[in-house]
Length: 475
Image (cartoon, rainbow, N blue to C red; front, side, top):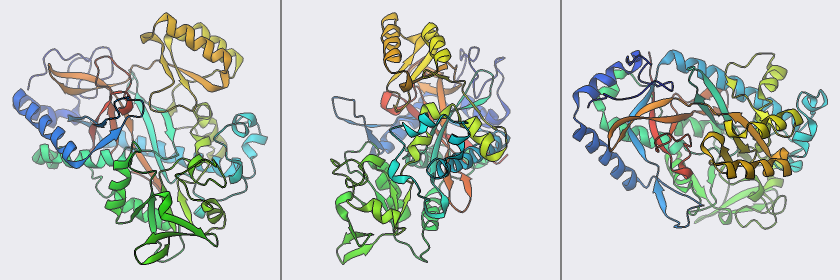
């Protein structure tokens, strides 16, 4: 398939240099691509789409009035990362998760970092994600963030930057795993020749990490889901199946004598570790939101008593707030005495007067985000927005400055994608997954999210984005 006319001038392209040369780690794939017909590539794409639907790889978009389930479009051309590049990402992510875990333990206990004014105390203590019931708690094995999905982007300089940390209930890993199986079938020989590191053992590693949280020799593990109407229900059921553990709803669980039991056909069985996919506020109506119909009354008391472990621990949301994000480099330095291996995107905190004035004056050049919003919502991309939208966001910032941050508009790297018109570059980000059990481990793959619309920088699936399989090479 021909790639003439492919533009790699304005952005860092993962396959082509600005001079149009093939990057070394893409050479084998490019040779394959140059020999295969356009018709064959579109046939492979069609087969991938059908396989996704057959597997039930769908998600719900809450803001879609049609209420339809959609597939996360999987582009047939993989994203390929050389081993040397991956090792730096791996080291940086381990460093970051280690520091954030120490931060969480500190802010819920001694609060040294707040007393030393490294992080403003009001930023943490007044945050809606700072859970006062967690004060004084140390989770099993001292681990708060067991599963992390960290979003990175690559700017035009070719450097990776951390975009945000996802420490609560990060989603998307099932799409990474299933996408790999689909793409392996599309290029079986090429996949072997390239020497791609495996991700298929993720469920085994996840289960081992969850079991590590209990002192029992054979702990009972379950996945707690809000139910079939949740946007990530496919992932909840998929991971439970792959780990060989029970998938449970709140109504399946009961608390007796500060122990958690699940109802089975043989009666009640104690459950020791819960991989929760329910937000903190819905976890226990007796401790958090009394209106919650999804959680389990009394389950937080069982957690405090040490009779059940949660992954991730309640309260982790305070560390992935977008305003706290700006302080992570200082958090790393404070706890580890190290400079960050991976840099943040420069961030303006609208809660600070100097930063706020700059944002209001340059809003047409910046990306403005709500500190607690996700999925691409509550966001303004200044250069691609109207003057009316600029004016509206200025008023929102003035009314509630604590609720907003702003960042420069990064160019975001591009990767070749198959379109109806041929092969064209589309902007991407990268979400690797990090497990924290006996040690911190970065899975050698990632969910690459793609902005399918030409020129778009919004990669979120809920906003029409797609995905790619991510190949991390052994060499």
